[in-house]
Length: 235
Image (tube, rainbow, N blue to C red; front, side, top):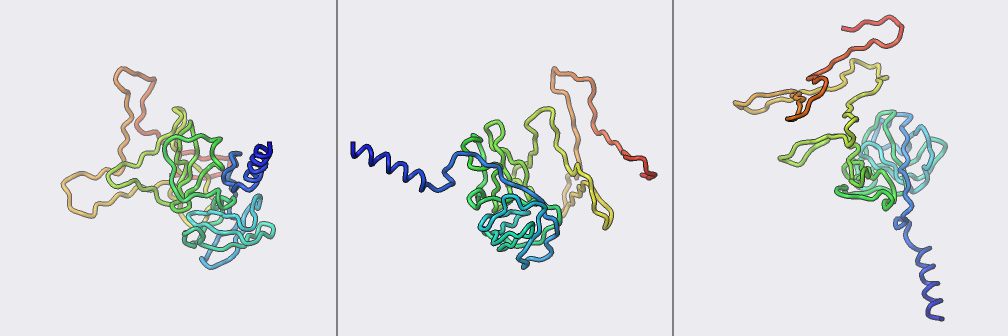
């Protein structure tokens, strides 16, 4: 009886002393945006649109840079720059900021199968390279990456949607920048060595697989819209 009671008490103590990262209650990583640009790499404060879940000793991550929060005053956040092996850099206003307790963030990539309810927090961000992962249909899915997307040497970069009725959207947003011309997407491959092969900037090849039909097949569909009632021109 004494041995059983001791075991129960010990289990209770270990439960309360267990590190929080062992908990199975899934959390969601909080996100907001910068309300002002970060124009230098030595500043110790940033401003955010919302300070919900910002607390001292938590980690925030913005465009490849991790910062440790030292204090919070309204939406003004005091930080230690370039944390977790990252490099301090400048950031534009309205850039997405993720925040959470430090063990919410990772330094490894995810692949293969996953179970959402077994994860401490979702999405998962690898602060070493900016990859952000979600657990979708029991598989790890790379949802977004900060900066350059590069495939291992000798492989293609593949971007696919899981659902058949969803598409890949690039720069499908409204610009508020007024400092100059805007290019939504730029594709400028260049040849830096003599070759006898051709250079294709873009190849678009929709097709019907053998034995299947559809109402239409369109290689490229381009629409130019002038929205609103104010006078405007396009060319």
